[in-house]
Length: 442
Image (cartoon, rainbow, N blue to C red; front, side, top):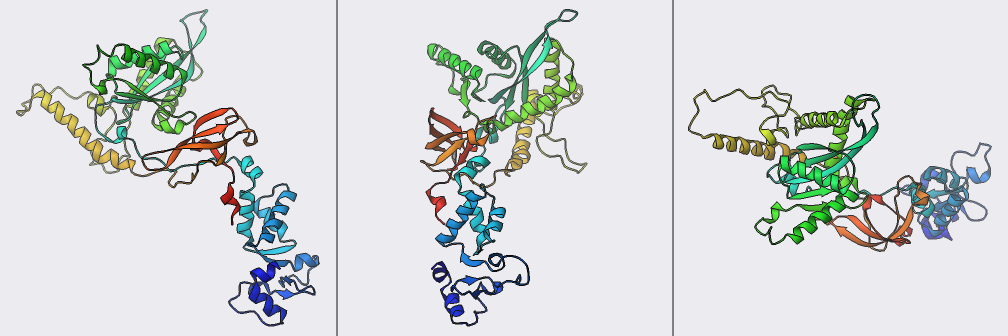
């Protein structure tokens, strides 16, 4: 019945002992009709010692329901075999037309196999936020992250003890300027004192982007309460002079790739300098400052091979007008200058850096290095498992999508999921979708 439904023309021709058309897809298999009026593959294995079913398997099409049921049965009997093994096992009895695609489809829509693989979603890389592409003063929009712990000694000499300290990184979202601070512990008070030191040296930022660390959340609450309690006394300040905390979704470090990369680069130098030695707190603060100078002297874009090109832009140009590791400029006070005043010359130099930043650096941000297409097509009501660190995929929590949060480009990257333990908000890169009704439709 399946052969009559999928190969009606070929079945009638073979039943009447006639030749198949030269355009028939079955012609390379040399089909014939057996004594039970079942089409089988003629093939080229007639002289072999294999069983009759293997030399002449039954012809079926992969789109028929009978073929799908047989593939599912073999997939379960062979302990959830992969596509290649499944197809080889099926061909021992039947020869499916288009069987490779059906084998992949059968293994892909198996819930157990989907959970065991644990392949998560990868939405298309998002658009650059406004803080990354609009010129403004350095450190007006800041990203924060912590690194460590680093083990230091409490004092010099004999009888010292090992204690922990941490690295707090501030990075400018526009020019990648980096400011490193040493922190004694990961607490709200320590972070607020670190923030005060940063503001005293670099100026007050308008907004701070950070993850959901407890110390960050506590600091945000304290600063927000301070602004509410002193709203009358601060009414003369503009909105951009207030610090606004913006938190990334939980378990989504890729939302803060800029400061995560800054931490990686900082630890690259710190680990190599410290090695197995233990510094004092003053010594490690000095090391942090030197690493900060090195990172602020890196070029913002790839260097040109031409020797006639000017010195490339670095984050230090936007801080002091030159790379922090470069030699100071000679004193030009004894030279005859034009009618420009000193402030006007500095302003012109600052505008020159910003113009070069817009022309040379911004163009390097156009390309997407990964996540070039949107493969995360999730809908409300879909069943997913939530990726958990240090757990195998079969132990991940099961949940159902309640709400999606689309970005400015219409692509959702964060979702609320209802689980047995309550509602969780996670990025889509933490979700492994399970087969839904559409996956069972061929």
